[in-house]
Image 1 (cartoon, rainbow, N blue to C red):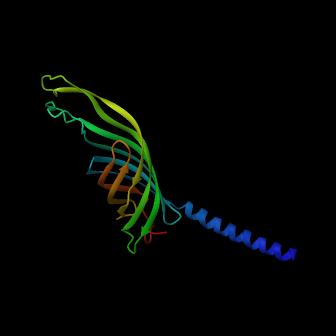
Image 2: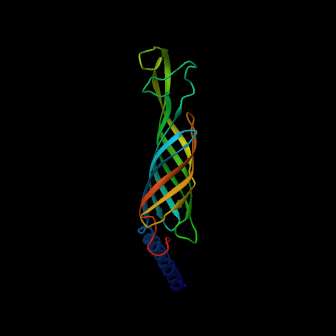
Image 3: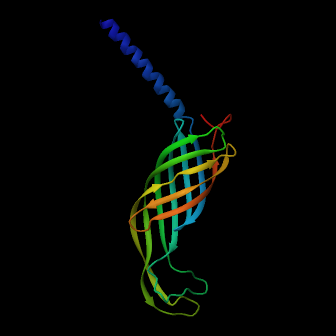
Length: 201
């Protein structure tokens, strides 16, 4: 009886070891690539992202986003100066997302479904005071900075047209208490985007 248990435990041990080795091998062959791009919608966007695809179809992304749009609390008679624009409410956040990769038959197209959290600073123009000047706006103002935490949803379609270069497109949604963002973005991708043979593991 003890011998059967010993054999059973040995078999389980080698199965676990084999599974761990496979997972380790996959984890050591990730696709690591960067993105840089922008978009438009409720806000204008600029973004930089570092992606890691691992264990066949998992993805983790670390991102920086800068979003801006015309502030809603501007006085009705405000006009910008000659070399100025209307005051902008801005959002500057870092985000961490996780999701899945959906490989298609062609190695040059794949889908990404991911979401996560972000944190950063929202800057809102406040304290408008009528103060006309020559070639400048007729109001002076300051910015109020607020710390924000938001939920991010960012599904995209990626086109890794080469092993080291491609582009992506998809919606970007950032829901927070100060300045939520709904936009469509496009990005240029560079780095290790896919394998040598067919683009998949």
